[in-house]
Amino acid sequence: MLPFARLTVIGLGLIGSSVARAVKANMPSVRITGHDADPLVRARAVELGICDDVTDTAGASVMDADLVILCVPVGAMGAVAADFASDLPADAIVSDVGSCKQSVADALAAVLPNAMIIPAHPVAGTEKSGPDAGFATLFKGRWCILTPPENAPEAAVERLRNFWQRLGADVEIMDARHHDMVLAVTSHLPHLIAYTIVGTADDLEGVTQSEVIKYSAGGFRDFTRIAASDPVMWRDVFLSNKDAVLEMLQRFSEDLSALQRAIRYGKGDELEALFSRTRDIRRSIVEQGQDDDAPDFGRKH
Amino acid sequence: MLPFARLTVIGLGLIGSSVARAVKANMPSVRITGHDADPLVRARAVELGICDDVTDTAGASVMDADLVILCVPVGAMGAVAADFASDLPADAIVSDVGSCKQSVADALAAVLPNAMIIPAHPVAGTEKSGPDAGFATLFKGRWCILTPPENAPEAAVERLRNFWQRLGADVEIMDARHHDMVLAVTSHLPHLIAYTIVGTADDLEGVTQSEVIKYSAGGFRDFTRIAASDPVMWRDVFLSNKDAVLEMLQRFSEDLSALQRAIRYGKGDELEALFSRTRDIRRSIVEQGQDDDAPDFGRKH
Image (cartoon, rainbow over all chains, first blue to last red; front, side):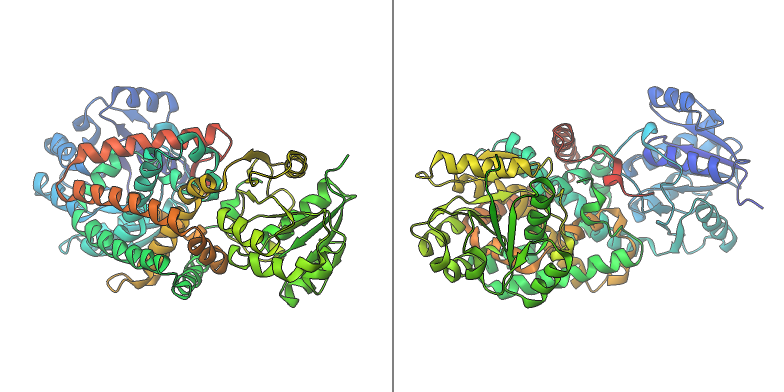
């Protein structure tokens, strides 16, 4: 017994098109309707055949849905939901895939006061964007965090859990504010730092951009991957999860200042102590299947 | 005509054992003598058969060498060279693989005043350490930077260039101080930041270590790879290239403060402008063969 029969995916980029592909692969009888604000993306989605139907308006896409998943930048969630609000069936569950959860919950509740809203965040992705970048196995072995509001019916939460499990994800339930704090450190701060250092390297006058590129295998290239992620999506993440990001950034800056001081005053013991401790976290991540053990991410040598 | 006939490798960890393996694979007639200060590493190197001979002292290892390559942490270069100074043949070239070049040049010149010293830095590696971590193709398609002192004989520089090219590397000649500035941004600062953020995440009280590990696929796990690199090697890098690292760190901190301010005051345009610019650098790195184009570093999904 499938948890949903008629899925609508709004936003057909990397994540939305991956959801559609994964549903097609794992629940082929589910009818998938797609919509994207960009006509070029809609046309490409039709060519790729990742949805059963692609509609020109958000309203038309939700008309008979029992699950609507918003896969748009978090800053666009409220406007998109307002757009289809009058067409939404009363018993449909509305969910999303946004990287911040409290701001999305607030935005959706404001424009869909009577809808059953269960925000979600599959912690998965790549640095690529657009409908061609998606693939059916993106969520396999990754965590999907649901942040149901307190009054959410248990049965609805379980249907959404079942849905994501069928796409290969492990599901966790979490308070929205706690989610935003956890992801600020495991995702938002890393992206912010990667964007910063790539920008810093690009602005140097004593070192050319060509040199930065040539010698990037010394570590820098690792940062360029996540600094190649979708600019609008990430702009919205930082604006929407401002408090948690600023809090984590403050802690990071303090720790960086301490290391700066250790370097300035030649305190090798402090450096070595930190550098030894950080190895253990890598080991745990590999042991828990959240990364491969292959040296250098398994890059070809 | 091979550039060298009798190679000595001192320090048989990731890089030293890779040099030995690569020479064995590409110049099988070269006689390789190895030494490591750690008796367990020496024993393991004998078991692995990566050298023709492994000696118990540094002095014994260099006796008939025409090329000696020091593959030890940069802070240990001077002491190791002092240890074999009296056994070094007059016509041998002494080189190294250290990540900072001016400090190594100074340290070696101080204890080997009459030797022909040509420092080198193959910009290659993985996060793994020890003799088992090495492999013959580590240097293939990577850059190796030579920083010969002004009075270095051209023929000696050419022999060393030829040597690294035979291991698959592209060779560049650079001034030692400029090398240290370039690598401060492409390698040292990325490592420092990765170590810092992994430490920051480990110290949080509102987010558990288990949560950091579970949701690391959001970006954090990328940083844990280089934060798992050898602690002693990296301690020495930061102490030895102090000025350039502090200079880059200062610029990075300023840029990070500017982004922090943009987030605090909701300046989405500034964020988006930076996030769009950084994509181009990734594209250039991929185009120039310094990283794969496979999404997510080609991780399995």
